[in-house]
Length: 200
Image 1: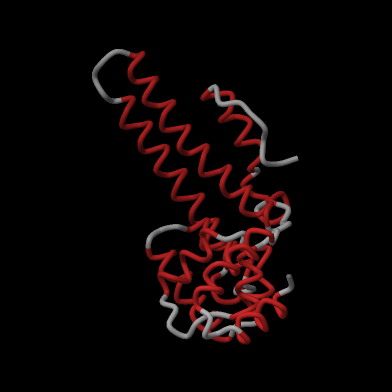
Image 2: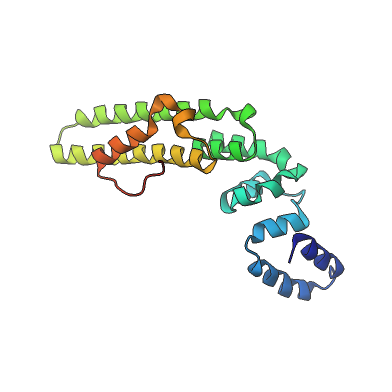
């Protein structure tokens, strides 16, 4: 069933509560993208709060329904506020991802955000390693702690590469000075982390 078909079906049976409760979920189960179907059918409610918008963005296949979402003036008025809240919570990579999705690069400046995120992560890594190396105790325990810190740092780098890749952005060109692929390979070697790499 198309979104127009579902909308007409619900409007014609608006007073048939039991029928709608039974049949609408069936239609959604048959749809390859139920979130997109329902949004195209009824749009974004005016009563949606920023928290609701955030949940929608985090839980949906956002790229698949972004076209429908952009057609909602209600949603697009709230999206910048929701992204700002992410940034205040230091969810930098999420902030950048949704900035690209909704075409808000002129407001949130992804390159600046990611550069700052990577720089701060590197400073924290070096400070933590220095602190650990000055600790008393066995070298084995210190080495284990350092590997753990590097793995967290490694995760941050991978998340940046994945964020850019999901938006069809070449990280080599977008952040050339960081040489992300080389850093990831070095961190894999240092920490023993292996697996499919999020870059080519």
